Length: 600
Image 1 (tube, helix red, strand yellow):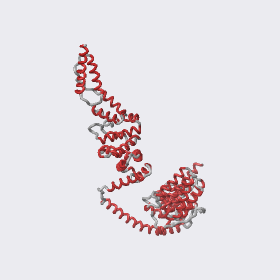
Image 2 (image 1 turned 180 degrees about the vertical axis):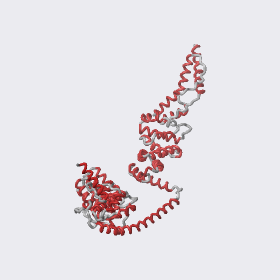
Image 3 (image 1 turned 135 degrees about the vertical axis):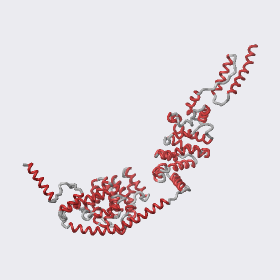
Image 4 (image 1 turned 90 degrees about the vertical axis):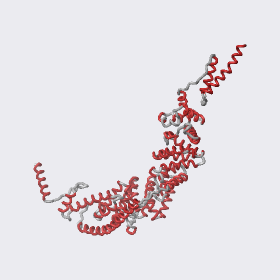
């Protein structure tokens, strides 16, 4: 029996489909998916005054508004605004506000874009702006009672950008700040600081007296010191932003400045009042006057889009002219071959180095200014070395700056490597004081491993390849390294097998003459301990045989052995002929004494 009933039900359902009797499943909150072509057929077949038709239109409106709000961005907002007004915003204002708030909570970084869209809609339909502010205030106060800092930050940013777009009044922002700072806690101060950064530029323009009051309130909290260090640092960061005139936090960027001042609609709402947020507007409700309301909105839409289309046409024409002008400027771009830009850049770097209090401040200014995005490393290295050379004595400040930038990025490190090679090659043209400062600068960078020791490959310590100036440079460099690292640690470092290919010129092993020159050089500057392996290498080299005279007596052989050993142990560069002559003279002087002994 049950099987028969099921078959009968299937037949009845097929008959209903044939008779175009449409039923909509309302048991699920999201409804059912209907393909667009099928939805259009159903709308045409339905009675436009029926409940089913209105429900289908409601679902389509919800889906369309969600898609448009989620798709809006800085680049396409001007193109999407006409599409938003194509939808019935009077009927779906609750849906529009809900979509805006959901999108903002999901992506707070795009709050300024969503508020720009709201500002445009608010000029034509002020009821939407009023309803949105009421709902945001309701959620803000709800989160404030729950002490939910994450949602407080989200809604505070939303209110700030509504004030920036002149949708909400600036008094609302001042009251919100006073509430957060009346009994300050760590979380309330953090929310207040974030809110003030976003809205401070607008408050300084619209309400300068209130701006000063809030600023003084922050200063009082900081001076009392009742909060933890983190909160104090946050307030100090806020004062740094105020000092820069909110350069990093503009109220409205140029791309989102879409509403003229005379068209702005500002809503004055009180933070302490309780408003009706009209949640029922988010749900479907049958409207007996649906057809009349649709005709009313069509007239309003024609009025809105008619004005907007002309404005968009003028804007597109103006944008086309701007693109043409930019292309012409690109074609007529003049290259500066006088070097004025490089001179101005180096001057800026030098003044920043000289005006900074310490190396951390200098590094921060340079990274955010002339060396932004790790560029201009060659000019930075040149100016740091030049500033160090111009000092009367070596200042550790320049070494710390060079160390910071070498460790910051490989581009800066490569620039200092090239500068080391250049300064060594130009050592003959530098004064002794400048030579000393530069050598100590690079010794500091090397000892902290900010600069690879492979840069020493440009040094060739031989009598032919060095000058007096370059030898002074090497002397000061290694004496400073020995003082900073210690002789034992320095000796271990230069004897590492990995560095030997790069130190072949500094510690030569090619000929005995060059090896002996390097040993004598380091010994003369008090760093003979660095040459222990060189001495062993020199002893292992094959020695040239010396021509010695024939001797008959055993005593003469002993005297010859002692004289030859004394001559071979010395590091002087005397010839073998002089040593043989001295030995022969000593042997000749000893012969008459022996003869006298025989006569006795």
